Length: 563
Image (cartoon, rainbow, N blue to C red; front, side, top):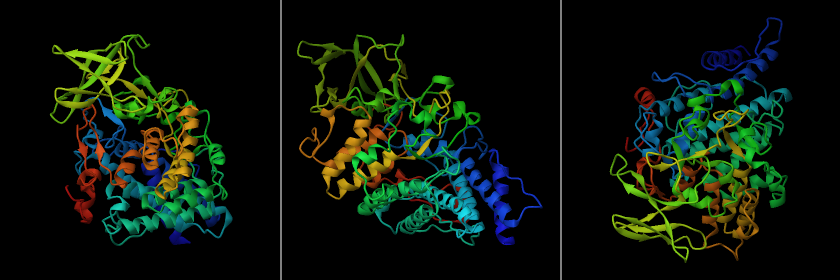
């Protein structure tokens, strides 16, 4: 017991020294070692959650330097959902432009904090006894956290599982004592994650340790994350069976619909207490990071920066159905005067937004003829827009020898560096603050889409589309917008339907990059913004991040290729 107490004491020191959370830990000489151990372990687990959100100083950068901010940005910005409206000194810009280096503060901070969190989780696993009922929930939380953080790392710093299980992964840490640092294979890392999540699910109940607070994981959180992991591994039947297990053996569309929050417009503001949330990084009102928050980059209200907007292709997907709540509730176009103008403009990508590889936007007055066709005039030449979206609307124009996707929008859109502003509110308005949220790591909507994709890839298109429709109905899509094997709305493959639905439902939540590359697809970024105007090959070395300089120069583990 003395050895176990030592481990927890060391971890508790990390909590008190690195995290600013309020810890209800008051050891007493009158308490038994078992009581001290349980209280200490509870405090250490609370410290793990604190290290996911607390600001820390690293490489001289304290403000906004948090695990959750960096994770959500590193996972989201290399994808195709966001438009970067200008250059930034924040290292998030390197993620958006695929110019990552091994000495960036965000990359180094995330790596450093990840292994501190894993170490602390290991001390809890080693310090408690799972045969004691009162210890099982906390031990389960520790296994869940260890799996989650390892998965964050292996998806950011190693090639996807589908590229080969023998590729270099990340160092596995399953003990608080380690004599060697090496990169385990991708296969070894995933096998450990699966084992940890099964263990976590066997130990936890479905009642959070703090009632109503989904910042504490449960059995379903572990199984939900396991469904994601199986999907990433291509183990589609295991993914489906895991979701069935979560539903007591009957994951019908009706039962799954009941797991969703149908007050969807207020869901993200209330994610911490919503029953749809399986796990979030819970923030209190006192932990509002203001301009340093995740939401600040998406939304200028409340003093935020508001410099990251939805991409043209994503907006086109949402606007297929104007009632889509994922658009109307969480994406806010900004108009001069506050309301849209009756006059319309055509927004056309133009060359050189500070570099030959970036595009800004030219705006032209739109003219609509009697047949409903749009034209605009530039340099004495009249151009006609062509809808290439089939039954949906996706305007293209042959402009100066290029086939460009363009958008027709009200003429009084507010712009930054010519890019029309659309604020995103998924990371705000908790307790009324525009910059406060409890970022969602895992929710039932994702689990449903995990199963949908697994069905599609198992060639069960009917069930895949039935689950997609559960998500679409909650979003307010009308009946004529539902899918079936006889009504594919222009699609030819259910897998593509699921991928677009995941893109819309989970936008900005850190999924899209992984969804594209794990399926060995290229990332098409031919839309305006200060991100690169290009298609990123799924074989590009920079689809993963470099091992931080502070790690590989000390431990001498192998650096990723291309860095």
